[in-house]
Length: 309
Ligand SMILES: CC(=O)CC(=O)SCCNC(=O)CCNC(=O)[C@H](O)C(C)(C)COP(=O)(O)OP(=O)(O)OC[C@H]1O[C@@H](n2cnc3c(N)ncnc32)[C@H](O)[C@@H]1OP(=O)(O)O
Ligand SMILES: NC(=O)C1=CN([C@@H]2O[C@H](COP(=O)(O)OP(=O)(O)OC[C@H]3O[C@@H](n4cnc5c(N)ncnc54)[C@H](O)[C@@H]3O)[C@@H](O)[C@H]2O)C=CC1
Image (cartoon, rainbow, N blue to C red):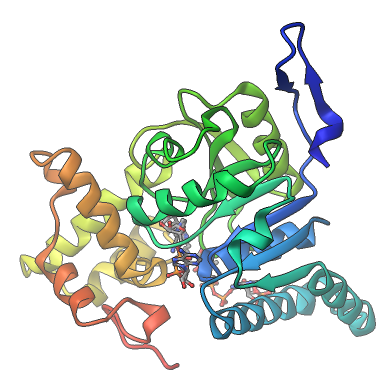
């Protein structure tokens, strides 16, 4: 646990050196939270996955199991028994809970992957700050919100950072580690070390909109939607063009559906509020319409395209 790494400086205030993360609470059992829980447990961490109700968590467990079965099919092609043991071992390290307070009391790290809404994230962390151990590091997986703004809801700005995973978490090799102005070097180093322990390559980011990847990726996705809205190409052709002409694994409409159209809308709406005159951040009427109709992409069964449930 963290406490063994805590030093006391001459003034008597506990300061932190780099710590080892072994016990993690992941809040939000959606696409990202389930993936983060999976890779943390696969790296040996004890993980509690939290969501608002049990049916969501049952779904998260099914998603994790399905993903592990895909991993095992390759990794243990020659030895199905070892594959089953591998899955069992990882699943044993994951528990679920709908009580966020009970699940966050005594852990090394609480990482949040709930809805991309500043107020909701602040409310969550404000509550958690009151009950979590002072040694617990808080992190957000936000795609687009300033880490500092989320952290401001707490009294632990030094022990708060961004850890931004990519979808699908088990396959994507990158994690962005975000150092907000008050994030301590020890917190940043601890989070970086944790990202590496999970088998990811980490890059260091400042607390700027979209960090590195999304600052480039989201304007590209939105530009594809605008191209389509202007009638300058069908979405199918734009997707094929980017896959075959630029070697992207998915076209922009496939990728927006994969990320979630609600998340894309939250991101672009937030940025356009910050910089209303920036043409890259202009909201899209078509995206707004799809989200209003509940067409959120793959996760809801329909977005730009329709998916079999
Ligand atoms: C919004 C944000 O804040 C940030 C973001 O995340 S932006 C989004 C970033 N993500 C991307 O850009 C993803 C782009 N897409 C891709 O890289 C690929 O399409 C993909 C990796 C998702 C799927 O790959 P694919 O070749 O199209 O599909 P598929 O054949 O199903 O899968 C390829 C392999 O990965 C495995 N796989 C796919 N999804 C998996 C999962 N969730 N878990 C485990 N394994 C998985 C499959 O089993 C398959 O393995 P084999 O090759 O051994 O059969
Ligand atoms: N979808 C993507 O490609 C990526 C998303 N992100 C970020 O990760 C976060 C989550 O995104 P997704 O997993 O895609 O969303 P999702 O919609 O799949 O899952 C969000 C989950 O959070 C739960 N939730 C909402 N409020 C909650 C609360 N107060 N307490 C507990 N659970 C709560 C919901 O029930 C839902 O299960 C967002 O901040 C998003 O911007 C980051 C990287 C990639």
